[in-house]
Amino acid sequence: MYRDVVQWSKIRHRILVKGDSRRQVARETGISTNTIDKMLAHRHPHPYGPRSHRYPRLGPHVASIRRMLEKNAGLPPSARLSVKDIYERVRDEEGFLGGYSTVSDYVRPAARDEDCIWEQAYDLLISLEKKRVLDFLFLLSLANPPVISPVRKKQFFHDIGRVIGITPKPNKRAALRSAAFEWMRSVLQKEISDDALRREIGDLPDLDRLLRRLYEGRLSNRNRSMVVLASRRGLSSRMTCRFLDIDNKSFRKYVQRFERGGYIELFAPQINRCRYRKPDPG
Image (cartoon, rainbow, N blue to C red; front, side):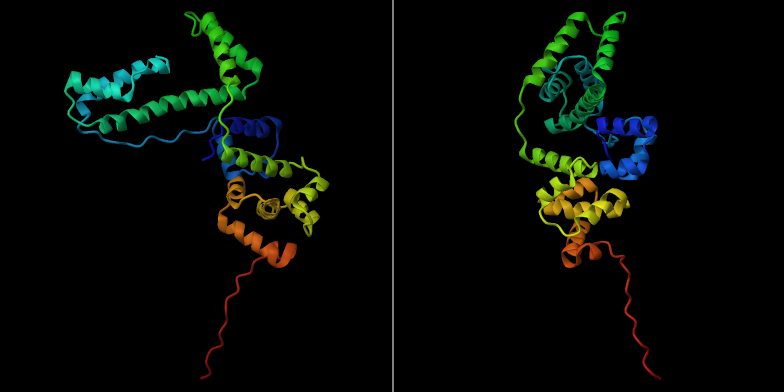
């Protein structure tokens, strides 16, 4: 299921507040209408549900491990007990006879759930306008007792500035995917002129008709046009399929049809032709 919190909020705002249609948003963003319906039904993406596991050997020690995890939640990451620390405590102080992996399998999912909550809170904060974020932090500092003290608020902004200033290690694959998605989004939203598009993809037959299908056609027609444009642009089938939410088989089929018969073959209606065999006489 789609889980981009920022995009989720923007799409809800466009449809519920600005009044844009579902089909228009689907055509411009490349997200299916079924996914958009889920966005409209829920304010935020639903996290994955936890799997049920049983830990028979760990049973008598679960309560103490839960207490340590709850204590960890109120501490900064540098001061928290590691999985190894928790394992050694239940082994040395409570006589746990199981292995390290048993404790690790139980502790790590709970720690990830805690981190996931903070990641979602961060995504939500950065999706808000700066003024709203500042108002929110200001209200936290006015609570009695204050949820965030003036000193902590100052340190918070200092840390944020330091983190933003750190240049992350470039991820070549992520950069290529981001550039590909941005190009397809720009084409869908008509941010690239026809002349600029011709210079990028070369001499493509029936480009005007492809663009007309891209902007005014149904979702399936839009996908066919975009597959042809993306393949001529040199984008990989994997990136194009992820953007359009189609499978690789459909991608290959659209490219082969266009190479075989151009625009006419690409958009020709497909008729199931059943072989008819005349009955034997007599």
